Every structure is written in structure tokens, then in C-alpha cells.
Image (cartoon, rainbow, N blue to C red; front, side, top):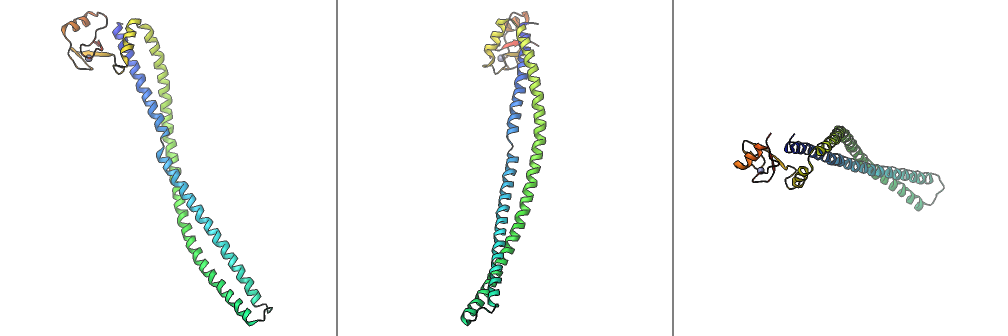
Length: 233
Ligand SMILES: [Zn+2]
């Protein structure tokens, strides 16, 4: 194999490695970027917190009602016990019992409102939880395929790197140095295929001196325009 052919094969190998490395990087980003899942987790947490808050209010209200009922029972027991004889005191007690009954009625209305609010919140929280579970399941399924792909790509890259090492070892040092020096400046493509008489990367047609040199296989011949090493397939 000529030096230029060996360099071209090396370049193909390296481009292959670069492509796979790019895909691995993109997969890593995708695995970390779970915006949809995060969004549903946040929505669920908010819905559960809102439900917990309204449930706490409901418990407080139930306790307050129980306390009001007990207070009224105590007042009624005392009122009808016969222990109190003073008419003024009896009248005050009667008024207290009535006030407590009114208070209980107000609290019952309030309890009714909180109960229906709790039911609404519970429904929302259940929906949010279901959506969150769906998003998590979907993310796991997607991740599984991506992780498999990443593993395959990593194995491929390792094999390609081993092949690259063998290829480099077979290329004369001077030719490899030239190629290596040009690699960054030429965007990983120091070798350009010659089609007809033109460089396929910059598109410029080469003069007869260049074409003759290529035909004779005289070492590495550069494109007159972009300077890449020309290779006729
Ligand atoms: Zn060129």
C-alpha cells in the first residue's frame, strides 16, 4: 500500500472514531437532560404538598368542631343540671349555648368547603402522580436504549483505536508526521480524494504538474489550493 493510501485509510478510521465519540457525547447529554421527567416530578411534588396542606386544614377544622361540640355539651349539662338558680346567670348560659350552636354551624359550613377542596386536590394529586410515573417509565425505557447504544459505540471505539494503532505503526514516520501536523488545521481531513483532476474537498482543479506527480506516485502531493495531500482512489 502506498503511503498516501495508508494515510487515507488512517483518516477514514479516525473520522469513524470521531463520529462515534460525538454520538457518545450526545447520548451522555441526552441521558442527563431529562427536562420532561423533572417537570412532572416538580408538578407532582407541588400537587402532593397542596393536598397535604388542605388535609391538615381539614384535620384542624375537625378538631375545632369537636372542641365546640364538647364545650356546648358541657354548657348544656350545666344549664339543665339545676345547679344554677340565678336567672341572669341562667340567661347568660342559655346565650352561650346558642352562640356555640351557631359557631358549630359556621364551622360545619367551613368544613364542607374544605372537604370539597380536599377532594379536588386529591384528584389533582392523583393525576400528577400518574403522569409522573408515566414520565419516569418512559425515561427509563428511552434511557435503556441509549445506554445500550452507548455501550456498543464504546466497544466499537475501542476496537477502532486498536486498529488505528496498527495502521499508524505501518505508516513511515515522516508521512505520519506530515499528516499529523496538518490534522487540526484541515479539520481532521489532511487527505483529500482527487476526482478527475479536482480536489474533492476544496473543488479546485489541479494543474498538469500536480497530476503528473500523482500519476507517477512521487511521494505526497499537495492540493495547489487547500494544501491537502491528494489521493486518487
Ligand atoms: Zn484542495
